[in-house]
Length: 483
Image 1 (cartoon, rainbow, N blue to C red):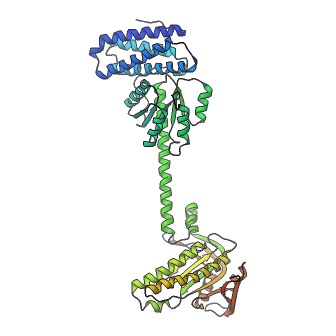
Image 2 (image 1 turned 90 degrees about the horizontal axis):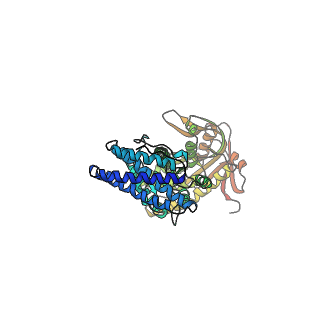
């Protein structure tokens, strides 16, 4: 039977219904030879046909009727194409009737972009988790059946609220979204998806019978990744889903890399922050070249402190007591130095070597070094209270401050290096520290000249220190002038 297809809505609808009636008659005669799944697909096709026939008999009233017709045509088309695959010419009469039905549906579709039938799926896509949202059961069943045959895991939602609940409970790769639904329509679902921080990267493909260009543009601007008109071309849908799954996979991998990078940076900060200042760690993380060997000239204020008589004292204590006392002291002093934006160069037994002004220079480096030294001496009272409570001796610390130009940078070898400081001012600071008494802060004249604040300075001395030809002028600093 060769049916001539004419143009005009009345002609195509009449032709479509006659082909469906013919197909139903052929099906009834062949039912016994078909398997249960094929029979069920035919029953779904005929339910969609009955729905379409009802819609064709209703007066056309705006876009709603057209949208419903497109839904019914999409169901007819989808089941007809799947049935042709399943029958695969084994029942020639049924196959030919299904081919005529598809031809009539293509004529009914006013949008030429939807033309073309399919054979077996030709778009090879990584299996994905697809959420199909449509208020019509036949549409949900069709999409679920079709995509499941392509290896995808498909869940469906009959409303916008149900779709959002599914997104909250599962990691969805692609959302297929119908626009015209009661209560919460597709546009509102799309808006909520794209505004949600955990869902906004999920691709959304809008599938609708509405051909309103302004509505299509509005959906794309709202974040929809694509817009397919019903009855959709299944090959095109597969291609869109493949692209959506790939985008989602790339996003997921990028998110995993970002989280891994954050974990690595936290680990680096937590680990190396025990040995380096936050500024040095940040410099390494933000500038990989910061790990290269080399340095530059910096004017810095150098601090050196140690406990008076610690070596003799430790000879009379158990090793565990020495470690407890030393860790308590170094812990308290480290917190103060780092809170003052000082860079701890190293611990040398009970001595601390720190620098203010590198890797980051500040105009108040000398003042911060002085204020830090005053805070360190003040903190010794609490350290000694804890020592006394545990039967440990009282500690007294001397601190020396000196300002000068040093080479600051990564020093060592490719296998082992540290951010350190080299230069004559480092030696001068060490020599000044040798003259400190317990509880005393000595500053060099070069540091005094850099101070901006008012401090109480006493006991000016010219020190003749070992290894330095000229004497070094120092002052004892008692505190701020206004204290």
